[in-house]
Amino acid sequence: MRNVTVAGTGAFLPGEPITNDDLEKLCGPLPADVLDGIQVKRRHWLVDPATGEHTTSNSRMAEAAARQAMARAGITPEDVDLIVVSTASPEYQLPTAGSYVQEYLGLERCAVIELRAGCVGAVQALDIARRQLADGTHDTALVIGTEAISPLLAPMFVGRDPEAVRMRDRLTLFNFGDGAGAVVLRGVDGPAEEHGYVNACLGGLRKPGMQVIGGGTDVPFAKQAQRARLMDIKLDAVGVAKYGPRLFVSALGDLLNRSGLRLAEVDALVLPEGNAEYFSREFEGAGLSRADYEELQSKIVENLTDVGATGSPAVLLALDAGVRAGRVRPGHTVLLLAIEASRYVYAGMSLRWPR
Image 1 (tube, rainbow, N blue to C red):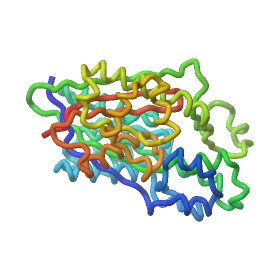
Image 2: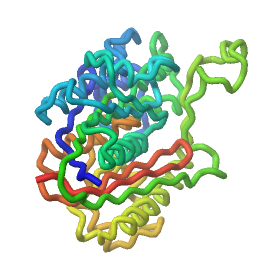
Image 3: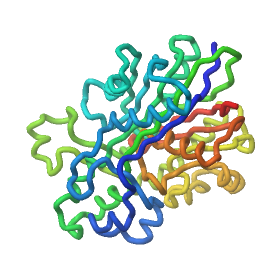
């Protein structure tokens, strides 16, 4: 088995940041305590907030993040022989968004794998790519998480009186953002370093924490066309706030155990929602000791405040921000940990950041 190393990271956020003040003018305010709880202050959307028109696309965002990661890794598209993409919001059911990234990079031949997932997808994608590089199936992989959520949000407010927007829709609007994150992985000669990986769904018998409804095959299309919105996001905010922290604590314990690490040995814990008050205030009640909770505070690497909840790219955007800010440095022991509200899924990976 070959060693697999991270060669570069990249990120792309569409348009100018949309502040909470900007959003309040579009859809009305959220109560101050709710706004403080979600901790999002800025987000980026690929739709024009005034008109709902698209300024770019999901796969174009993925391409932009990929090109930045390749530039930082010092490689060209011709070096890439595997692309693994995670998204829950592709332009089309088929062909895959990954195949469009391949097209935009000018690659006639390349292996492409796509996962239909949210927050956990990029970590799952990293593990798939890592295994195929380690066994020599491929040499260089682009792993991309990309999400275009704003097209689902625009119908909630475009052309409407802000005061007429429902409070539950405002909560969704203030939460989510678009973007793409990318990582270049390379298989290199030398002894393979240990990588821990965990993945589980804990919500098989539980009501989904989030659903994206429409555009599927749940009912005939004639019935879908009769819905108030062709596509919609349903968020069980109460359920996520209650059960999400338990999911995180289970995931963290599983990853540490699988990796053979103690929390004190971890230098950086990269996750999407490390500072959301509704989430972190419940950690102790979910079984995380006060000592471990305090130990975590200096290790968490995230950027929820600046990008919002972004789904598939969330961990990769936080990772790229952490690398740029010097929070993730050569030789660091890094945990990537994603949890997803859809069916209460988690995926985590431990790795040594390359020197």
